[in-house]
Amino acid sequence: MFDRRLHGRLQSTERPDCGGFFTGVSPEVQNDLIECIDSVIQDQIDTEVRQCQFFSIQVDETTDISAKAQLTAIIRLDRGSEVVERFLRFHNVSTSRSAETLSGIVKGILSRYGDSLKDKLIMQTYDGAAVMSGHLNGLQTLICQDYPYAFFFHCAAHRFNLVLCQSALTMKDIKIFFSNISAFCTYSKPSPERKAHLNSHGIDIPNPGETRWYYKSRAIFAIYNSYDILVSALTEISENPQGWTDETVTKTDGLLHYLESFMFCFLLELYHKILEKSTILYSILQNTSIDFAYGIRKIKNFVECLNNELRNDAAFNDCYSAAETKVGAPTRRSERHTNYKQLFYEVIDSIVAMCNERFSDAESFSFIDLVNPKIFNQWENAVPQDKILQDSATEIWPSF
Image 1: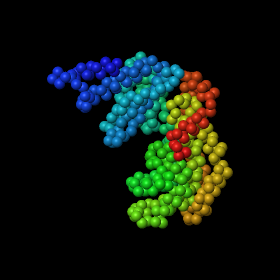
Image 2: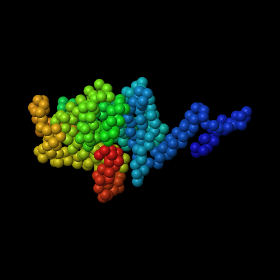
Image 3: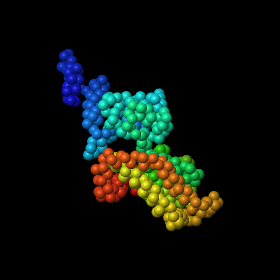
Image 4: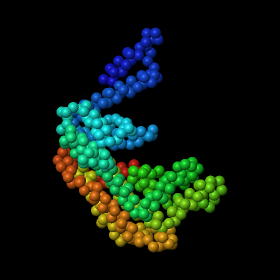
């Protein structure tokens, strides 16, 4: 099909006066070729949609490098033996991001498949913003007007990301801690000299994202695993400031101040324990081959793990002792008056409470197991998936 379309384009470029040579360097010709490729891919996706048993649509909005708001549209197809994901296209929504505008775009995407496929659309997935998830005038409600079987489900990985991000910001000490973590991440970004100095000691702290928890988790793991080396590398700059800018020396002393703080080390130990559990769950929820029931069970297991394995005096004593080993007992006035056990339990309770709240509707989607019990049985009887997904997580985040 592509050959025929390309052949037609080549014929239209033939020019008798110069022999009809095709060089492909013209912007117009290159755009024509891209349109041909896009047309062929779209036709293939259309065929897959008509042949699939069910399909769902996923939409999310992000800002590109040119500061334009782009709406990303993706569909997931149930082909009986497997579920596949197909990217459709970007839509510029910079001028309006209202539910009506987004609804018009989504319905325009779905209209190409005709009314005969309305019964096949069984799920729609967006983020939890009111314009998307609102049950009165949100995008999901407007789509259901034309596609009555399109149940709305807020992405589980996105929910879990919000749980971890928002639970960390409900307490002053935790908010300060993550602000300090960001200072480590941005320390070497504007300075090649600082980055080279840290790299020479084998230290690489990734830059965090504001809305993506795993970036913060990578930073915490990097600081935790290279704590002693990081102290040594920063101390070299602090004790030998010659050749370093005033800004570098000032920022270095600030980071050393954090590393020598009992509160910082205590929370570093606590969140390292939490992240050991949450990182695997995050990779499970993002795995495209995971069925719904298995993912929900793992969320429940994560909550039970926090309650049973981490929320106890023994785990608290481990964190407290590890922080003492690093920097000694709390000496600063503010730290001496802190109830660390209370803070320890508050962090865990906050995560557990938000998990229960954000996934409270999960049971209402248990009927999804009936759609493809073969996949469910496969996950139940296969090799333990946690080990496989833990290896997968290690590939994604080698610092683990």
